Image (cartoon, rainbow, N blue to C red):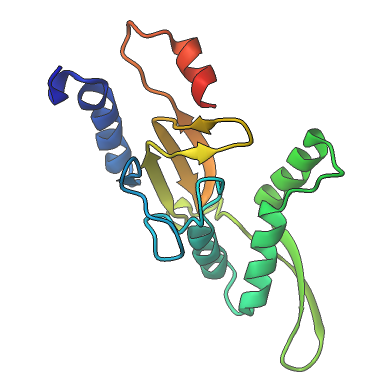
Length: 179
């Protein structure tokens, strides 16, 4: 089957075109992603799902005049896995961080303890956020390697999941195999 009649040519490319029209940057990771801080997405390996490079840049942009340690602390709180909490509790905590800001504390240059919340998204001026769609984004979990067709990241946080199929494909099977 030629490229123009493949799933990529018919569906994924059209999706990319629409996302780009909406202001998203679109990159393809499949067989192109290199790892490390200078890699395509800045991930250390396929187990990372949050794009820390973009998250750091966004938090820094939205919350100026704080030291890097505050931004790094926010990223650590967003990405850490807490083994002794239920999934429901973890989800509630992370959702609160994303909606209301991440609580951080640091000592300023005067030796004073500063406690504040750092915003992850700009809900009032969406153009202040970074929108990145990654085609064929591979994620290695505990049991399986998954590769959804498109994952949409806002400020480095994966928020949108696309599994694109031709009309004759079994969507439930495709979705379950890639989520």
